[in-house]
Length: 486
Image (cartoon, rainbow, N blue to C red):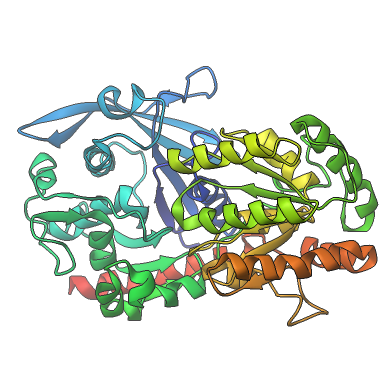
C-alpha cells in the first residue's frame, strides 16, 4: 500500500484561530476536504496574541527553533494542536506575532511575514513529519518558495519539496525594499523584471518560482493575464500561463447550513422557506430596524476596501433609500475611509441603515439567515465566499460579473430555469441601480422569488470537486519539480 501524499498548507490566517478575510475560511475547509480524500495535509500558521492557550490544547514540538535573521538568529517555538481532525502547527514568536492581537496592518508586515517564512523553513527540520508538497498561500508565505528555489535546491533535505502557490488576491503583493533579503539572509534571490528597482515583491517571487500556480476561480485566472487586472504582474503571469490554473473555492457545507445553524432564531431548508421569515423579523429587531416583512432587506458582509465596490454601492444606496423603501445592513471592518462613509450613511438614514464595524460570526450568520439580497458590486473578485454562503442560506446575490462571481452565480435573466442570482457588467452606479430595479420586481412576486431562493440553496458549493482538482495540482507539481531537478 502506497503512502498518502503529504502536504504542508501555509497561511497567514485560518479559522477558528484568526480571520480577516476568505483566506482563513479556505485554510480551514480545504485541508479538511483534502484529508477526506486521503491526503495527509497539515496546516501551519503564526500564533497571534489573540490565540490563547486556554482555548486550544497546545503541545510544544521539540526544542526551540533557530531562525536566521539579520546578523544572528532568533529562537521560536513550534506548537501543535488538532482542530476537526486537522493537525495544526503554529509558529510562536513573541517579537513579531504573539505580542500582537491583529493579523495585518503594521508598518513592519513585510518583515513579520518574511520572518514567518524563514521560521517555516527552519521548523521543517523540527516537524515529526516531512511533506512532499509545500502549499503556500498569498504573499505572506511566498518567501518560502523563493528560499526553496534559491537555497533549497542545494540542500538534500529540501531538494525534493514540490511547491504550489495559490493567489487569493493579486492586489496584495507584499512589496518592500530589497534590504528585506539581507534581514532574511536570502541575498541569492534574484531580482525579477516585474519588480521595481530596489524592490522585492513577495507575490511575484511566488508566481515566478513555484512549480505550479493557481487562483481561486477559473475566470480570475484568465482575468489576471490582462493589464486591467494583472496589476503590473501580467507579463510574469503570461510567462507562467502554462502552469497557471483556476480552481473555484468551496465552502464547508457542514458549518454553513441553515438547517442546523444554532445562530439562527429559526432553522430552515429549501423545502421550508416560509419559516425563514422569522429570521428576517428577528434580525430587524436585533439591529434596530423597523420590522417590515414587505421591505427588501439588502446586506453586505465583507472586508471593507476599494475592490469591493463600496463607492458604487454607497451612491446606489443613497438613491434607493430616497426613492424606494429598502433597508440595508452592513457588517465588516477595513479601510477607515469606508468605515466612516458607511457610519455617516447610517447617521443620515437611521430608519433604513444599520452598520456594524466589527467581526461578529453570530451576527454574520443571522444576516445570512434573515436578509433578502446580498450585494457584491466588486471591482474585481478572485473568488468570493460571501455569495456562496448567501445562496446556501437563500439570500439572492446581486453581483458584478467578474472573477469568481461570474463562475458561481447564474444570472436568472439569461437562464430563467437555472438562475440563482443577478449579474451586471458595467462598474457604475447606474448599472447597479438598473439591475436592482429588476430584482425588486421579482421580489414583489413571492412564487418567483421563492423558486429563485430554492435553486440558490440547492447549488453544491462543497469542496468535493475542488479538492480533487487540488489533488491533481499537487501531483502535477511533483512531476514538474522532479523534471526541474534533472
